[in-house]
Length: 498
Ligand SMILES: [Zn+2]
Image 1 (cartoon, rainbow, N blue to C red):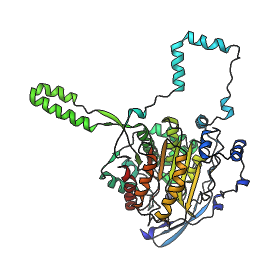
Image 2: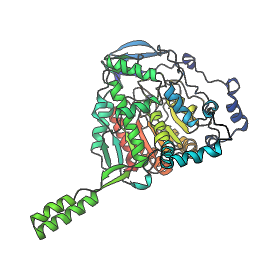
Image 3: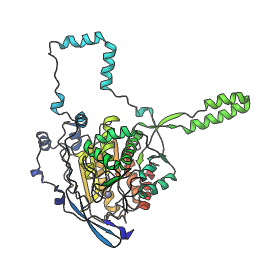
Image 4: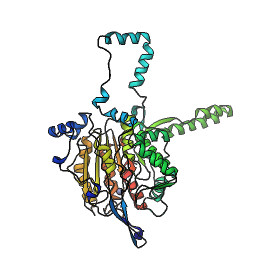
């Protein structure tokens, strides 16, 4: 393994054309200037104007990287595909405006005011029932309610062997072992409910298109259909990648839905009671009764809520709206967040990124969205050289970056979590917390130089449980390239929830 270590060069942020501007240099829209002068708290900002500032997503350019393999050193250039963020297609435009009240979309032609007093009663008189129903269908979407679900023990783990099908031709640190090894351990961990994703590919695609440009999604589909190719020197696509990525998006969506609203399961206690009474009835009365009793013993089904973990790959937190990078194709945390806001009734969603690398894609997805917030721990001076200013909270005050020096261990990590990151997330009052659970911050990881031990994550899990409880937290795998350590760290993270 050591001969195959892959190192990111310490690229200057100028390489990305995204050096953080000083506040005075930044160009603000009218609304964001207003936010700045009034200096509201992050919470006030989320509850205030729904105007969304244009998303100032990072636009990566070139960065050098050295790949040492088999004793030889290769130099690559990353980011040669210059995908800037494109204008949204009409359906996404509509979607975005769902949460942001741009004046142009709110103004609708109205009938003359003198007609209004007569128009509505006339409509109701003509077809009152159908008018009411159609009005209702426009304003309400059928939703399950968490009130009808019970809180269960343990943790859901969403996993599929199909996640192994996305693989590079030669050696690559982002390989199937990253999920197959943790899956084996989780399978034998008491309290883990291993489940296959159930969201359909069509529903997953619709959710992906709310975050990513349609042209980019089509580019990935077509490339995958042709058998694959490289998006850059790091990021590969093969024949299975497109479907695997849709399935991974489905898994993250399942996590959000099952944790917030519950998943239908057999109630074991009810089932066992039914079986006991069935046996007693059969012994007492005879075989004719046994058939009827057997029919009545069908296991009861209840909806159960519990925390969830999406054991998926490839990772997603570097993926931008129109560009894959850093092994990432689609941004699953952003997809799950958007899905929770649009389909699950959430008002505010928080993303906590534990990966050793800054989630530039996560930040880009959140930056212009006052109903999301993002906090990240990451190693300073590491790929992708973003998120380096802990005082830059974005135009909506909903960003918190906590860069930490190389070789930092849990002693640096926990005080930051306790004193900065958790208070920031709690002040946002999220309905859902999505943890971008990257484990390349573990000691001995080949792609980063942080020094956390797998067991340290139990302390992280304990704090997350204390802060957010069991009913609104989900996790999804991002980086982490030492599979045995990753497996142990996942179990440690989840142990307080099991
Ligand atoms: Zn990473």
